[in-house]
Image (cartoon, rainbow, N blue to C red; front, side, top):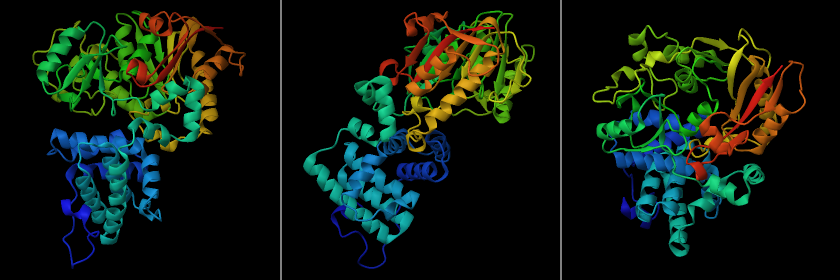
Length: 504
């Protein structure tokens, strides 16, 4: 295979055997094809493909992962380089061909551990397997020219390629929101993919759990989170369900998302509404925080998500055995097999089994048209509103390919409508946190200002900005009423949160 980079494209001299793709590149190519062809999320598609390839060793898993995330982050820059040497762009029509050519270009430009001849050879084999000998010859010719250009001029900086590949509207929105230097730092922030977050229940000893997890998975890395006091940050941990404590003492949850839930400041005995609960990870954390004597209810637009939430969190404390076997709501890569996790020598926690955390009621509701059956009188309401998702770019790089500037005004109107309607469920003097996994001003400060301004409806509630009353949020906000989390500053995904007191 090494000779192909120096040969004539592999289309002469009689019938050649069908090329065989390398396993990690084949996995990565299928993931990229699904992202482009069926709007799949890269992380979910990659998890599915890796489960189908259990024989891959860790190095191959790492290569497949880097190729998927790397190509998606710098796709536009790679295609621009290839266009310098290709007269036509028909190669982009077939997703698998496109994947192999771009992976070859990425390897040549950014993977110094892969020799150029090997990068070309692997890409040609994959492109030919997907599109036939003529496509293989095309890939060979183009990538050999790119390899020569890189050899002559050096490898380009990855950070510059990431910034250049972001759509122009996104670069502009980030610069308006963060400033030029911070916008570029945000776009190029690593590590990619980011680590997995583990969220400990209140009362659990993080130091003891760090020791237990390191002992259970010595090849993995476990460190204390920088922002959330409940966070453990894991790298190379594999299937979380197989680690001690999963589902009982902790669940999988990104550290910044933990900070949003903790910022609500839920306290024992309070009634709390998770208004956009999704599959319930924040509900899980909130339900622990209100013990003893409190209650958490969860609402969401999508009944299917609420069904998953109920399967995990709706069992009352008395039914501890059944709850302990349920799958973790929203845990990264986790499904309904949480019962396979063995606690073993896990540290003794605060006596809280998984069943001690439960959601009392769930409500399927479209907040833009009404409050449905959701009752009034909550002490605290969390509105983790639908948004562009720009804050999760390092985890979901495909978002940059799917969003448009026109999405922002529509999403801002949606966020205001949801937060205003959810606020009607809070008692007078109750607190509401508005949060989004975005860092764009149009979805952050601009929406918070609209919520605090004159009412755009006749719902009979006012939202007054107020300082956070949770310690973690007070520190992040510097004593103010809003904060932003940034990957290049805090090591989390990007988020915005603002606190309000509800007045009637």
